[in-house]
Image 1 (spheres, rainbow, N blue to C red):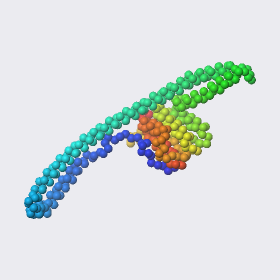
Image 2 (cartoon, rainbow, N blue to C red):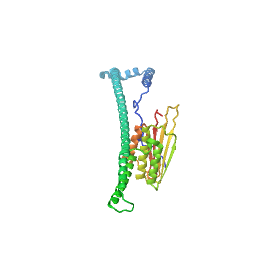
Image 3 (cartoon, one colour):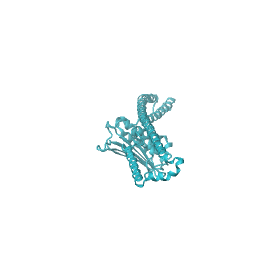
Image 4 (cartoon, helix red, strand yellow):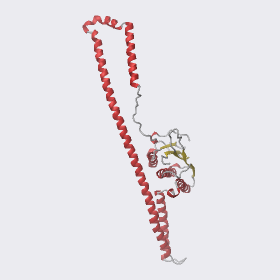
Length: 333
């Protein structure tokens, strides 16, 4: 698979204060150039007697007052200097206003990111609460209905109306159990709270392996993820879940590789530890225009950016797709 450069829209970096930074020695360098040019003109004029020659050439045109031209040029030069000074002050004020607007925009973007993170946290808490309610309340009553239906059955082999009705109730309850279990799995990752991130991803991969018999799924884990932050663990799981869903719908792949590892950043360079997630398949691939049209990829990108990470996609028609997410672990770990 030939790697492609990442889409610039997938990269997330904080805005820099000032688009065109000016070196602090630039004005003095310009002044030195002007002084050097003036000195050179003075030396050349003295060497070749330019004023005398100019006077000799213009003496015959005294009626048009050409000898007064230097004063006019001096006035024009002073006027241009004044105009340049005003333009310089105006540009300085505009640049200061631009930097102030950039700072305000950066603050608004940071606030929007914080609100989006809070929205996702509340959403996951609501899903967790709803999954618990479905499991505890609805599951309990379904079990009670099934036990009552079993109690209504007559002797073994009896073909009474009560026996037929009880069997129908048991079948309906079993179907509802399957539906509720699937809803709970979509609302909250199975085993994430009790067993951790790796167990939840293994369960997700095993489920897709059972559903897609013609596709071989593999999972490789490197590092200790037991103390991972809950929000980051949910983010990683949702990315894996959405990516495997896209593979099953669109890729027509025969092999899918899921790799999860911790990358230790050098302390001397000031880089923190990062989590690296790579999901690669050998399917049909996609064109550059497809990612912008799929809400699943857009949702994964937003989750990664809200976590302060970077999401990259490498794909080409007929050459599969490689999704890679790098997420900072933060200071809690």
